[in-house]
Amino acid sequence: MQRLQTTSLQVRDNQLWILDQQALPQQKNWLPAHSVAQLVEHIHALRVRGAPLIGLSASLLLALLAEHGQTRDQLAEALEILRAARPTAVNLMNNLDRMKLALAQETFVDALVKEALRLVEEDKQLCDDIADAGSALITPGSRLLTHCNTGGLATAGVGTALGVIARAHQQGKVANVWVGETRPLLQGGRLTAWELGELAIPYQLITDSMAASLMASKQVDAIWVGADRIAANGDVANKIGTYSLAVLAHYHGIPFYVAAPHTTLDRLCPNGAAIPIEQRAASEVTGVAGSFGNVQWAPENAAVYNPAFDVTPAALISGWVLDTGVVTPEQVKLGAFQPQ
Image (tube, rainbow, N blue to C red):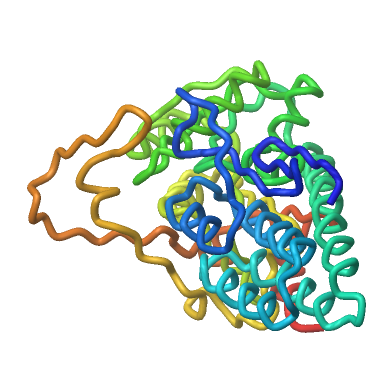
């Protein structure tokens, strides 16, 4: 396969490498993802994360394994193991469905490589189209609030919600970005803050519990988040804490937008209640781990509830900004996301 480079993925020496997002922003380490077991472990540890990026990494690895001589049966088994690595993020399933069709072709090695590279290029274009559609909704002087990480670290392109913010900043319309730290792994504090700094976009980092007071004091003009899955009725699964922001935005009359590629749509999922929600390790809440080591602040035997995602009902969303354009609540009610 040709050499490939995105913010978080590399193909070099015919092997897949991932940027360790657990070590950012203190360290910028590239880790091998040469086997299915390695990539699955990276996904579980959130060293590679973001719904689009997870799907792309799995697709690229399958193509590389095919080039390395794995049989059709071995690749079919690898595909299903990768499919189960992150149950909430539907981009992974959608990408692997396309790779499965390529695997069924007679010249499956060439087909897998072409499909994986096509998915990467498509994601770059999807991000640009989302940024164009979303930035048109942002007014000059906007103070925006975002949650988790939705930039180039999570995609092959400029990002989804953060890509919208970056495009609006280029247009001179962003006064400030409020960055929620995003518990439990602080992906806003570690990753989004770092990306905004690299882009020279003015931002202020807040704890998740500060958002309500900001909205009450009229310091937030709109909220922009990404999505890991959008159900057929418009309900959205995203990083835990998104639902809280949507409720607060609704109460304070603040627009709440979801930015995501069409590959995040799951038209066969009827509503948010049908979206599987990943439960994560208690250690992510009882302490913190990173390049600095491990810190424990809660009692060793503390009982923990740690869902990675929550579901925001469609009724709380002002608009779904896809690569195909902005979908309004009225369009969703009329079945815009229903099976076609």
